[in-house]
Image (cartoon, rainbow, N blue to C red; front, side, top):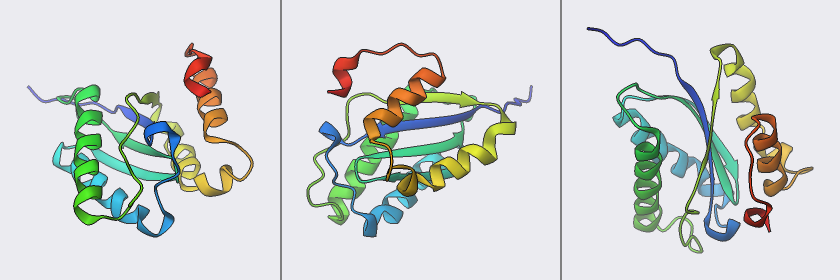
Amino acid sequence: MSRYSQILYQVVFSTKNREPTLLKEHRRDLYGAIHGILKAKNCFVYRIGGIEDHIHIAFSLHPTIALADLVKDIKLGSTSFIKEKGIFPDFIGWQTGYSAFTYSIEAKDNLIAYIKNQETHHQQLSSAQEMKDLLAAFDVSFDEKYFE
């Protein structure tokens, strides 16, 4: 039997303690490493972007892959890449959790543009407020203590 699916995700996670350690000049290298991890898991990457303290990934999840396992693999693989290449000297790791949101395929272009414009977007909005806004938009309850 064949498998057909279209599961478009946005996954967002931050550096440990939201430290601004992802220096702009090496982010593309990090995104390339993450892209490779996703491709190896048969996921299709639409866009990866972010700023100094967090990243966003838009991708289609392969139906045989569990999201939690994939995020774990991304975090472990990207941490190894960062340490091996020494590209972010102050990077101490990723936060424990992550956020994930699903989108209709019709929203794909807007999602890609949103991720592409992260630097401009964050000139007016903090990372914590962005996450609160995303959680509210998707009607996800959350505890304010995680944003202090």
